[in-house]
Length: 260
Image (cartoon, rainbow, N blue to C red; front, side, top):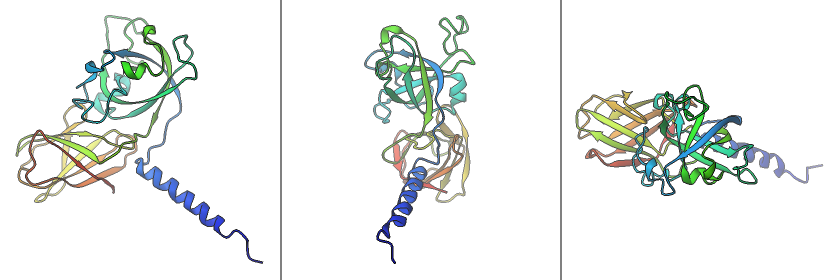
């Protein structure tokens, strides 16, 4: 006798396909386990002091990061390779923690530098090997009373959920190209980058600082494509024809990306 619910296997198959698609869309990144750290904040409620920063993201409003951001201690910042990574953070075990342990998701946009003049347990919060988040004040306010100054937290890396395409802010000139990369989904970070003009092969770019990469090549007047390698997931995203042949230094170009 035929089954009365033949659609069940198809439903299971559909769920598997959806799960695979979601994982693929996030760049293959798998969230890490919760770990202990501490968090402080910098700036005021406007978060104006968080603009710019060691990742080179500039105005965090116009680049899409807003005020849910944090500066990482050097052990997490990893000489700029931590730029763009996303973290869930919740306050843990302190009177200043808000009830219910609300979770805030932040993007790493800056470095919290060591303060060697102070001990790591009394002011030198970002001294190695401490794992520490110096959060924008509006982000800190979502998990704890800011009057506490510093609170213990639990944190974990998560996939970055971004809307729209990857963005490439071009600097330099026809013979030297410097690119700041923003709005990176999945792992959010960058380990390596390549550029291809319509008249060239793929050219390896060197890490300049933060989330910027450079190429010393004659690329003026050419349509530009980019390949970006994730520092975390080791997957490569390709943005074909990301910038037109008449690209202009100082402008930002947005492009959809595909996995290779």
